[in-house]
Every structure is written in structure tokens, then in C-alpha cells.
Image 1 (cartoon, rainbow, N blue to C red):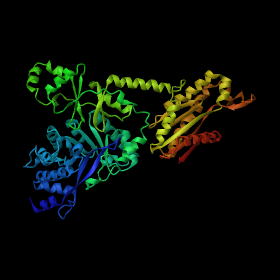
Image 2 (cartoon, rainbow, N blue to C red):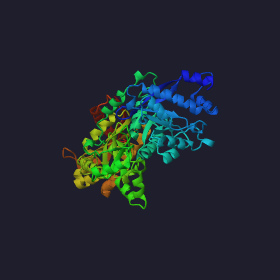
Image 3 (cartoon, rainbow, N blue to C red):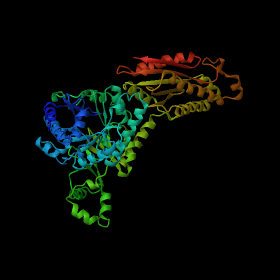
Image 4 (tube, helix red, strand yellow):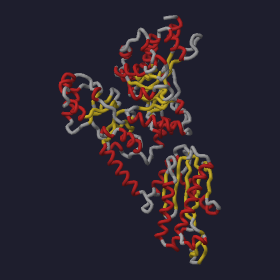
Length: 582
């Protein structure tokens, strides 16, 4: 090799950046990032590999750098429990000296296993002669038993094709889509679509470049499995700087553990099915089925106990009963079981019920989904158990709902307020109270009074399809509404509230007799028993825009709403809207 390459090899070093579980903060792996490559010859990392490609030394250089990265990774005391994420240039297969199967020799040198490495393939170099080459490279390494990740997903040309044709183990969403995702609707939509599609296929999703608390929270809300970025830790060349668990992430999960949408005691529902490794053979499968009569699903795990997929007994039977299936099986019993392993939906033990149901809906043919904790198999949720959980939750929710309107009652409202105050995001919280309801109820009777209450409940349900919203019935003529308003301006929030207030004032007129409607009032007794004129029904709205912090208290917000309610009733428009800063 030329001197410039020898000098590069001598000086280059690797920094490692942690990739951690989004719920627990436990490290899953480390991405190797090249450092000290700058010289008169090379001004960027792309120039290094572009020059190596043009000189036909790309594969040779990559193997040397690959060995350096693996050697340094192996010096980390916990390397055998982690994965090294190594970036591949997809042009290596076009080099004249390319040869597959060399990486395992390097891994053996440092007493590591295939399970300890994940190759990242970017969407670069997809034009002209290199169109589709990423698919080839991904399959070459995947067939050898390595984990594969698509890096920088979403910014190149062929990501969806790679996802469809090759089914990688991991997708890393590019930093472009993560930056300011908490305030950008398009990015949220894009990432949400990737997450749903990937997890339906049993593929893990890593959010790259997470730098702020709000970005982290939004990625977690959207269902990403893992995160990487400055919010966790910056890349470091010093192995002593690395942590097996990043407390800033685990502490956040502990603070938010009171989640009304999470399945409580989910471990009690799990079916702990015995598993097989992906290196097992068909003899092992048949022995498993003999030893576990009545079990029709076999979870298949990799060496690191991460789920690979499942084998369904019915698929084996169908193959066996086919024309030549039995003879082929008889000759292949010592072979690997990959042919019969199919993808299965995967959910984390901390995922909310809604997400688990969504993942299952994409995998209903498999009869259930695999549940993991820190990316390792912990059990299986069958379709029957999932339906039982849904039914139990429906019964519990029904007990907490107002019997007249069916809206959420005080317990759910209080839990919602408490949880959202810890979110660090902006919410508008509104207390609605009818004006002149008691005189109306006394004059027209409680049956018509109940109809008025149902009218307003229906307005709230139909006109309140906001982000992460809650509609509640506190009791009597008192209602509650809240939603995540981080994407709404102050004026937009006001207009949404005014629309509800105005609609009620208009619709409720039909609940009066024609004479009273024309007069614009009724003659009814007040609390002292005196006859008095009362205007037609309206509703007052006390609303606060809460910019929550960890110090914001639930009772403080409730007190502020109560104070504002008195102001709203004295205002011509019946709306009091204020920004609340703790």
C-alpha cells in the first residue's frame, strides 16, 4: 500500500458512542467512529474511502480498519455482552480482492462472536453502477449470521427497497428527522410511519442524534426502541468513559413509570415459552415439539437472547405433508432452521397497550407477539391473552367513567394531569362550567337537564380530536378538556375553545320553549326562592396554558383553574385563558 495509507493506518483511532435502550438506559452497543484521519491527503472521511475506492484498495483498507475497531472494542471489559456497530462502505464488493468470510477470523483473534458485531450499511453511492448494491452487501453478511442495520435511514434513495427486500435487523433513523422532532409535524409523521412499519416486521428502530430532552421524549412516545446521541453521551476514545447504564435515561423512565396506558403487571400475563437458538437444527425442533405438547409456537433467539422470529408448528406440518416435503426434511434435519423461521412482532415490556395492540394487528396471523426487556426475550403474549387484557382494561375504565356521559371521571382526569405535568411539554387544560344551569334544571326538570349535559358531552367528543387529548366529566355541569398544544399558537388555542363555547350556546337554544327562546331568558327562582330573570344557558371556560416542569404540582394547576373560572363567568365571551408558569 502507498505511504499515505500506511500513515493513515498508523495514526487512525476509533471513538465509541453508546446506543442504549430508550426505556432503561442500558447499553445495547457501541458505534465505532473513525478519528485522527485528517491529513494533507484527506480532509473528510468521505475523501478517505472515495480515494481508496478509486485506487482499488477499499476492501484491503476496510479490513485493516475493521480489525483495529474490533481490537479496541475487545479491550472493553464488557465487550462480550455488547454489539460493535461498524460502518460498511457498500462498494467493497466491487473490489478485485473482495472475499467474504474474513471477519470471523478477526473476531476469533479477540475471542468475540458473530453476535458481537452489527454491520451498518448507509444509503450512499446509490447512483449509476451502484444502484441495488447495498441489497447485495446486506445479504452477504446477513447470510453469514451477522446483525445488519440500515444507517441514515430516510435520506438516501433505496432505504424502503432495502427494508422490503432484505429485512435488516435494525433501522437507524437519520439525525435530520430527529432534530427538533418535538415541534415538527412532518418529522413526527415520517418517524411514526417508519416505527410502525419496522416493528410490524420485528425490526428494531434506533433514533440517531438525539440531543435534547424533548427529542428523547418524542422518540420514546413514537415508539423507538433505542437512542444514540449527545443526550446520552458524546463519542469517546477513552473506554473508561463508557457506562453500562446511563442514569439520565433510566431516571427519566422511573419518573414517568406512572403511565395510565401501560399494562400493569404485564409479567403476570406472559407465557414463558421455551426457546431455541437460531443455530439449532430440525432435530432440535422436533424434539422441542415432542417435549412441549400443546405448544404450537417456538420463539427463536440469537446468541445474545434477542428474538429472531418464531417457528409455527402448522408451517412444519404443511411442509411435511407436501409432495416432497417429508423426504427433503428427512435429508435436512441436520441443517439450520432459518428456512422455517418467520418474523414476529416485538414489543418492549414498557410499551403502552396501544402500541402493543398496533404491533399485534400487523402480526395477527402469528397468533401473538414476543415481549422483550432490554432487547432480550422475556415471554410471549398470545392473541387470547391480548384480548383478555383489552377486556379487563375496558372494564376498569368503565368503572372510572361518568355513568351519564360515559366520559372519563375524576380519577382518570387527575392521573392525566399528574402524568402530563411531568412530560416537560406544553398542555392546555380547560375547566368548563355551565352558566345558569340550576335555574334551568329546576324550571325544565332534571330530564331536560340531563339532555343538556349529554349535549355538551357530545360537543366535546366530536370537536376535541386534538393531540394526546382527554375529555372528562368532573360531575354535574362541570367538564374537563386538555390536549398537547406544543404545535398550537395562543390564538389558535383560543379559537378552538371559542368554537366549543359558541356551539354550545347556539345548540342549547333548541332545549327551550319558543317563548323563552324569543325572550332570551326564563323566569325562575334563585337560591333564595325569589323569582328572577335568568339568561339562556351558556358555558364558561377557564383555560391555562401549562408549560410544565418537574416542579409543577397538580394541586397548583387545579387551584389556578378554579380561580380563573370566577373570572370567566364575568367576561362577555365567557373565556379566561392564561399562561401558567411555575
